[in-house]
Image 1 (cartoon, rainbow, N blue to C red):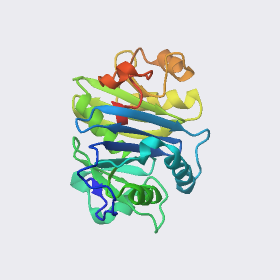
Image 2: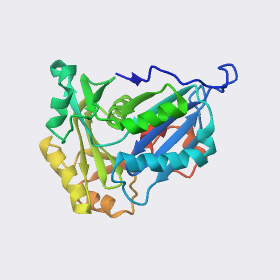
Image 3: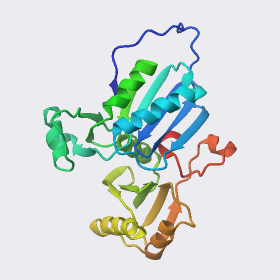
Length: 276
């Protein structure tokens, strides 16, 4: 399910004069990134802001965003569509057969601590018979609404799963690991089927490899045979890559086919959610 803010603020420019530009923004406590695309979904601008330290609260995140929105000219435009992606660990997958929209808080209570005041919602996954139940950053949603009017929002995991399944062409079991600051998301696919999805915090290279090997063990993946594909903030000369290669024989990097990378100094395996 894609949520849309129903009310729209009054915009001074008429729709006839508004350029057909689409804005997609990804928020997290580590930073945020955004892309601008034309009506044919060709990317015309990409920007990433990485915070020096992980912020403590969504309120701190809002303060950062407000300051950046005031100075970034790319964000001073009108857009025909706006999509917000919330990246946090406040989510859980629920199989559709067992899903009850009246039990959202109960689903999350199994994995995280929730408050009575938390707003909880869910996404329908396009390629999996499951719902992604999560807590969005409501204060960020409110700010985006005040700034742009109507918009859609989703959880990061929902986008990650749907895009990865759509792009995967391997018929055998394959592990995908999306790396970000002190965090990794692990997905295991077999053809177009999702076998495993989870997120973990890591602070050392030992933490990093532990979660990969633990997942492989649970799914009976032979470290000499299965393919591990990295996405995100990881390089071949990094310590986390080196330790992974000590234990897993077949490692590669996801390579985006987006032509935007041809003119940018960006790794083709990074920024999968917005550029992949």
